[in-house]
Length: 384
Image (cartoon, rainbow, N blue to C red; front, side):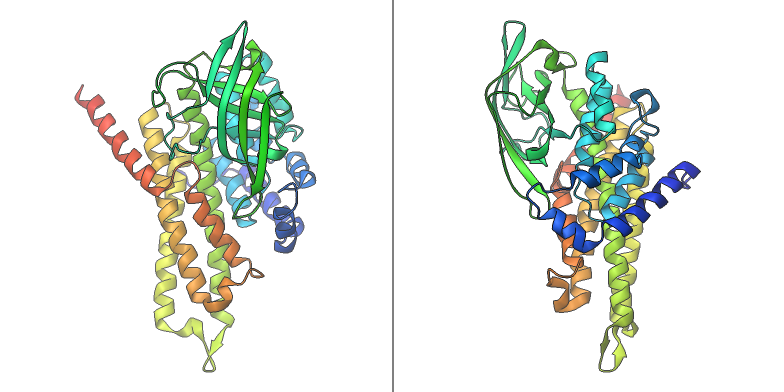
């Protein structure tokens, strides 16, 4: 496997890192994250103009990338800057549109890539505990269209979204894989209520309530009751994006900690010269490299045609990121001492983001169980 990025990806990474360092300093990011909107529409538009969103999509969809390593490059840079703009929703909703959309539905991709449309992924519900097939929100036929009833929880940047991708059950029991359908719901649809609140790691999230939301026949994405495969593809892209974002945050936390160890003195001596701290830092560096390897493996596997190989690599990466991210957060703060807990310092904000990434799209326990289950599934296929 070639671990070197292409020239185009290196140029994208350099320009994105430079833009974030110049325009998205911590003070600016903190102000944006705490704002009424939870992100900056101006910055989001600038990301689109830089081609950052376009890099997340294939040429067939109007972008110029779309591969696993394109996603990894972009989100690692976003993680370094603690960026709160809604690019995760763009890549997940965009993947679903690309995989299952009609020609008319795919026309929405252009506005997503250009930053005109803010898209949000609305699948999680209050009691699902990361189980992808557990969907209680219902969609019933009404003439040629549909009527939605139910609720979705913790939708990132849901208040400012223009378009939601919503999962709903059209048949079967609440935990069945079959019977899940996907719908495109404009934010201004009658009967849809959006209630937002601040997220613990910056930005805002929202709860969606569907009270007899009427949709036309063209709102259905893909075949009725067969949305699980598309849902899995969209979540897979989101998992890779989160893993790469966490890697960028780890690198930033590592750099801040190394800088602190090289400048902070105790008893007239740089604390970086203490052997105990050197050992702890060396262990941390090894763990971060392991996290990088997991992200590379997931990025390489996401475009493979074999579902089990792809999903196992993604779950392995998410498990590794959850475990290592918590370790990086803890060790970085402890090696800083009391100052590591002050809100004025960027470090605790990186620590919060690393902890919360573990809880998005399945935590480490969930993905460990999923990795084991996929392994058993693969064994059965080989035996057959």
